[in-house]
Length: 332
Image (cartoon, rainbow, N blue to C red; front, side):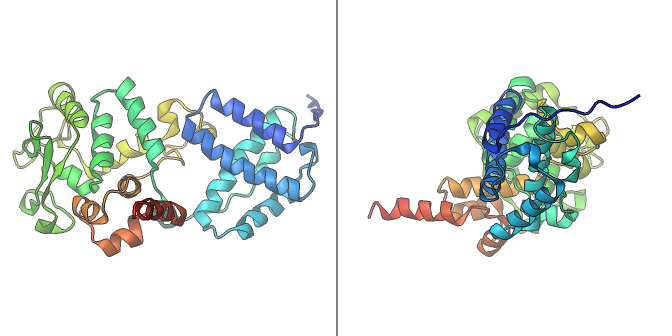
């Protein structure tokens, strides 16, 4: 069978960008569209700088030049470049579907390899995405184990080990608080030992979620020490690995019925856009700081020192920090 050569239709970069974003708005969340807008705007800037006014002329060599330009045009790390090129690949593939570029040109988008350590070190669940996921869970999976787990990790910012060790008796719904307890002799520990023991306040809305989860969804199965875990399976206390799988699951766009080309094409067991539990903790801490919660309060709530918080968790940009300082100075 002879393949039919597709005739390309002339289109300028900015028009293609707008059509692409219009298409994405019909099937993606606001945060996903916003990310695509940011990345494709960089593409349009490169095209304008290099007199590319018709995407029909775009070649693999151009895409390589664009990759180098993006790498050199700003102080970006490998993970940021990886995210940019992944987004560009989605855009170029879509352009092929409307006869703007050769259909297989997207295969020539070179995405840099990122080690698991580099990926995890940079991953952060941003507040907008977290809110969208929780809203989706509240609407379609209210009080499910997924809803209760992500709500807990996002609202409290606690580590996965702390969530793993929670018992039903550690939950005080009337007082809207949780109690974290270090119990090494019974198989549940806190990272900082007894120094990590503390009460954690929760909102009334999340208390309602936990109440419904405990009453309707939670399996009433004790663990090997006769305790009643908050998060259970049919065999007892939910493992840390199972908690990680839940986080990967709910942070994947696929879970929210958003299109994810990488998952669709490769049938990958783990969506490349999903994040790990530590990324949820990092995002939660950054969110609290962005909301002008004092650093000391965040440090105590999350059980992390000021130095470690600044070095490993605070993902606010320097511009965000500047605007927050400006807000204080204007009142002097």
